[in-house]
Length: 74
Image (cartoon, rainbow, N blue to C red; front, side, top):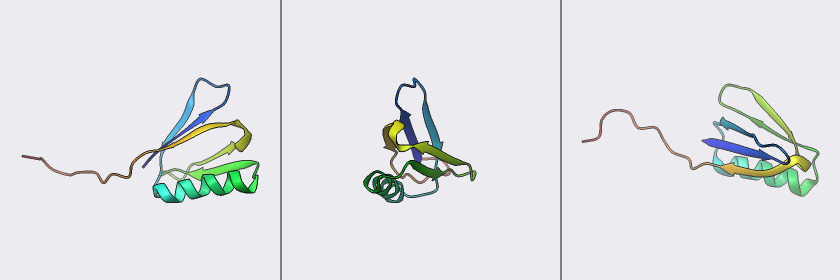
């Protein structure tokens, strides 16, 4: 699933593929914001860790979960 994170005062965004489900990512973001955590920590498919300060978050876009199709469609 595709995750994009917007950063305040930055023209770029963080974009990566995650093996976590949309509900898991949403729960992590919500719990960090509700608990007043200083950072949001997420992991991508390759094992890279992303640590973003919660006060710098502009938005978190969670893409739709879609299985990849293999083969040809007639």
